[in-house]
Amino acid sequence: MSIQTYVNRLSRLDQLIRLRCTGTPQELADKLGLSKRMVYEYLNAMRDLGAPIAYSNIEKSYFYVGLGQFFIGYKIKNASAV
Image (cartoon, rainbow, N blue to C red; front, side, top):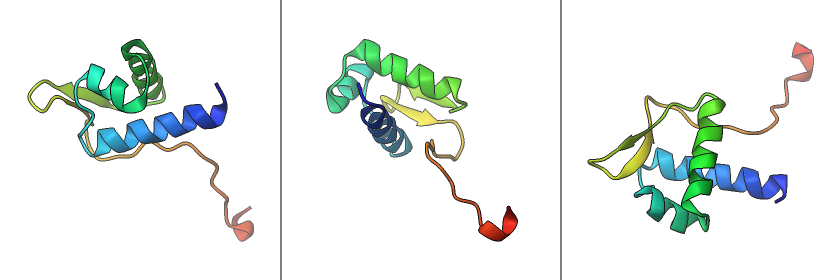
């Protein structure tokens, strides 16, 4: 799998978590075109990077504990600040 595919899946997962519309783990796997086991691996990778992800049995969705957004990328600093 390419790094671009991995990043795209993480971005889509982040979006679904922020919207609180992941559904159950199996529904999330179906939305992402992954196995349920792979969904757990992505969630654990995000948690390892500091994302405070929890699951609500009432809402049947994953969510972030607190406000936030998962970010992967490169930020260009202002040239005068270097």
